[in-house]
Image: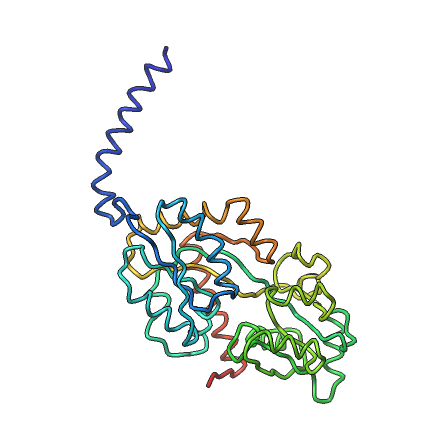
Length: 329
């Protein structure tokens, strides 16, 4: 009886607070949000890593929001075209942008864009990391990082390393490893991961810097050898591949990270609503299992944490670009 006497006044007080707060919530920009379908713009063609992640979480977000979440692929322009579409969209929460490493690498490389990623976009969440891998051809005798360093120094012209292209995370990461590990290597840019991996498997090139997706299956099949995973923990998909820290080189983690952003000035209440739906979606057991089995590391951080991460990445990669005199045509 005493519990009931104390409970009802509290319940009434809660109702009163909710009633008084409702107008403020509506004025904050959320209101009954959402009342229509939400666009999730992906700056790549269907079937790529970013696209697969967004399509994995879209159904769970739609369920949480009570409205469809439609993935729209807008490839081209090095992700700049799609990003500009979202930057120019109304800041009402109905247009989201899937982002990868280019959102900070373009700035680090000094590429001129019609937007500032830190000022014209609002972070929502860094969802997953696609860990980088240090790969070698089966023709390379090195079985670990130390042996690769020694082997590279024993070659008069050094070794050739492949990446998915000039300015890619593999390229900049390769330059970082060259500087920090003392590797004697020359960068050979390719037009995407597929041709780079093909030449690595064929022995036309000795080393490659690529991500778990798509290179993990080639490691599992023995077509290429992974000497290190470039993250702070081993992957359940490649449990025998050590981290660089285990090889004696801590603090050199990088990969192809995927997240979601919004137009700047999106109301905080809308940002919070979308973030909650996104966390509910990515934390569904089936969705997590799907992403982990594909090779992704789940991050799922807060808007504030994602914003801090972006600033740190821009600062770190800008220094690497400057120190190594990297330019992009």
